[in-house]
Image 1 (cartoon, rainbow, N blue to C red):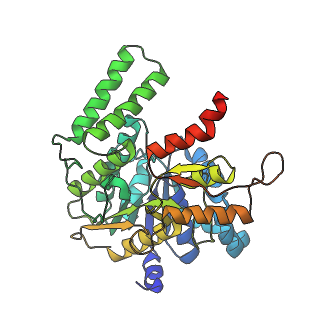
Image 2 (image 1 turned 120 degrees about the horizontal axis):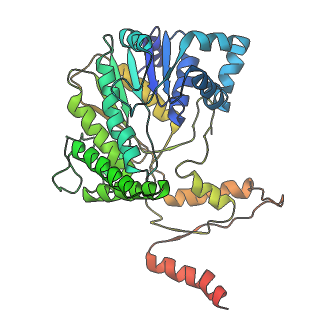
Length: 400
């Protein structure tokens, strides 16, 4: 698809982005404003008590980031004018109800009458999130966004961002198959999303009746999420609840144009707006930081195994192209897995080399002001090798 046709599609369009303070949402917002300032309106749904706190979040958590440096340089003093004309803040919460917790009825009606595109990026990505929280955002939230989108009379497409790991832990080529309501990875029958919600409510009521502490309730909900996920073949709460979210979107979309985007491990930007932008320590970043600080000396895994990573700006590009390609095409069952493992695979051995080369040339500076010297990470292929390595390197010294 030509870049010009994408830019043309965005012109005079009204777009709702949920999860507006999230990593991908910020990159999407910056991209749209940079390539098509003639977009009509961008509604940003974010959690906030009122308009004032929503405005503070916009400034502190979105526009205040280095990500928007290029945009600030391009527009200068006129950027504030552009922002005020194009961006509308929507205090809300997708886990609340089909109105997304938008209390202002006039604002709701305005959105329903004007909206062309919805991009659902709201999610909790913690693998061991509380089950009630993950179910509320990743599963029921997906349903609420879909129901909200159905009320938009001009809507051309809904883009729902999921994860490639809804497919669980499997080897080989994984196709972009959809999940029907009640499907499971291990063939165990009986998955009922409504029943899962009832089980959560029942468990919460029991814990509260027992006088459980806030911390005890939190841990119980975390444990419940992992347990329920493993019953049906998913490895953790995050991917389980995202899979159920996909089920609801597919089951309830009717004649709405819907695209599901499934990115793999999302990393820093490759090119846009500039290389290397990342927010906080995400996904595999913790490994790089641990290694750079000299704390990660060994790793358990298959040295030839593929780690499927994808730069964040490539995911955003896929989102934008998908909304253009599938606008007003309600009969498409469009699912795109956005990753690198098929066409440009990165293996753990590559990470081993990249890490060593980078931190040798640009070492981490420790608290004492001195550069941290790193060696090549030792990759251990089995638990037996791992135990042997730990015994020789640490346990023997401790005993002595």
